[in-house]
Image 1 (tube, one colour):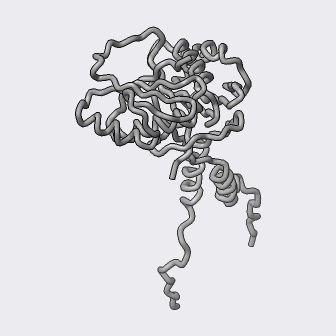
Image 2 (tube, chains in turn cyan, red):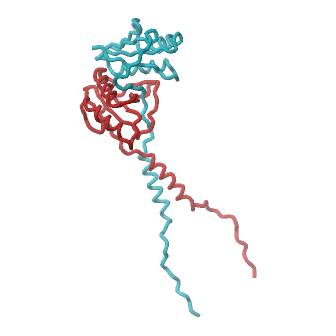
Image 3 (cartoon, rainbow over the protein chains, first blue to last red):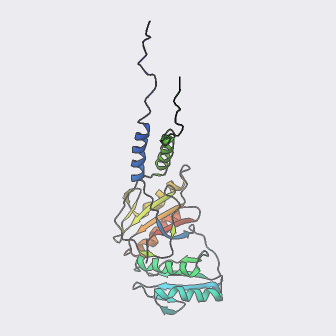
Length: 136
Length: 139
């Protein structure tokens, strides 16, 4: 009886460790992925030279001075009150636009607080905000 | 001669498709990972309530500005007057459609400085430009 010699060399690539390698890569990418997204207040800057005529009665002037004090249409107020005042004005005139004018020494923090209050006043509707050049 | 009956029920979970599942997850994370994470100038961001998310990270230009009138863009310090040129080049790149400029500005920065940045940005684009003032979430 002749015993046939078994062929020992396998022609296939061993795939048993493939899953391990893939897992290792997967864990690496899981760890390095940053999911946190940037958040902030959005605003659209118009291109240079573009001007729009807006009827005076639709404009509310909002001035912010260097100390963070606010003046809405000649009435002095605080930043935290802006939301309510603007909401009242919006019920009277839904087409109203707020022109924000800052002092050149106004801190950015106050500017963001004002924008935040205005955005809150408009709620889910797009806010109509115009940024005027700061007073010198 | 009697054959022993083979048990039909198998104990193990089939693992043949495991590499496929893992590879699928792997490819997802490879695609969604963004490695470049430039820290920019250290700034203290202001806080706000009514905030919105940025649409992705790939179509965003980041601009840092601090209270000492320094501006950083593209991982390096630049002059304020250079912003319009750099922005113009970025906006005309057909491979990367810029949708938003994310501004990371220190809360103590003065409006004088920020207005100059606004003007430079307005000069660069032929169309309206979306900006996003990065903020923290207020309580």
